[in-house]
Image 1 (cartoon, rainbow, N blue to C red):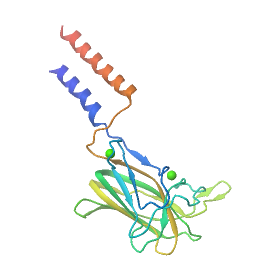
Image 2: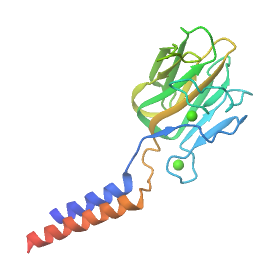
Image 3: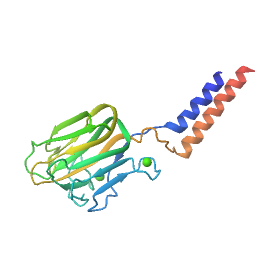
Image 4: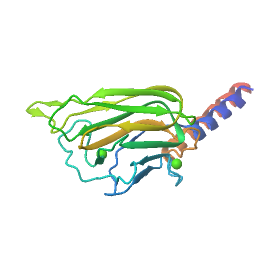
Length: 210
Ligand SMILES: [Ca+2]
Ligand SMILES: [Ca+2]
């Protein structure tokens, strides 16, 4: 019985490891209207960012002197409603966190990150005021910050509302746990290590049963 438990435990580790991921947009192509991220490389995007209406995303903004955005980020122009919609094809859970910067000389604008389930019920939201980040010899080029909504349940999509005036924006480094329930590959070295550990445990139980 104990040996059975050990074997089942090892198989569980090998098939349902769920890792968080940070989306950096480093391969963003300029002027696309959506950007997909495939967390487990099964060719199905787990997270899809969409620009509203006829807008498109820009990868060419100068966002180098920022703390929360490291170019390239997902950039664009202000929209009448939200600037970015994020769909989680396989769900997201617990918390999300996204850096942002707004091309403005005046900080103090409120931005928001709202998370919804598949029935359009809001699960959580974060509202943040943009500020200049300080450096030892100055400050960031643009006001910026990080929005980190915490929620329970499975998120289906989220909306990012950044600017009401005519400003450019960039978001970057979305951290979260996506693709819930999907199978993930793990590095061969770790797989061999886990497999070896399982065999060693089985051997140990056989030795002690004898
Ligand atoms: Ca980036
Ligand atoms: Ca996938």
